Length: 118
Image (cartoon, rainbow, N blue to C red; front, side, top):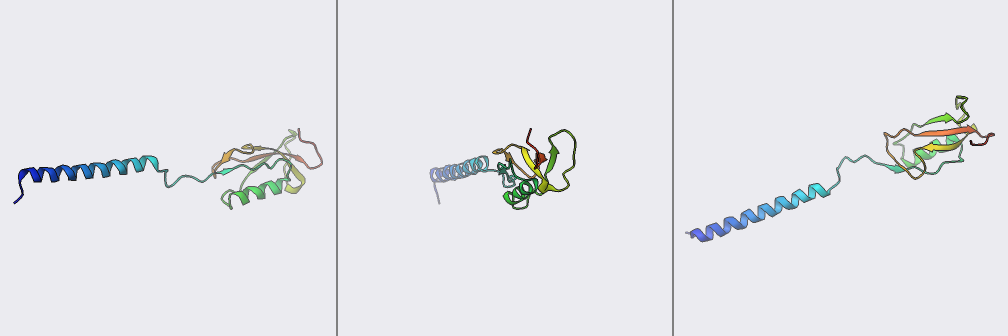
């Protein structure tokens, strides 16, 4: 039969071990990033490329996760970009070097390849 002192010491040791385990597990949860973190990429510098090449580059960088981007005629004339290879990229949103995700709206500011960027 154990003495009361031995029983109390064993109880204290068990409580300490459990307390440390909970503490370590708690810190692990605080330090660990969320498992479902959304992937992000760095916007490449696509200024000067034709619009089709810029769109292809975004799909390549994201391995197909981002497949849609919009484009805006920077002359203010509202022209539609029907043949993407006939348009050159003058600006991008987000700008080169910025991070983007699948939820980021990507827009290329463009002019015809025969025109100067504003």
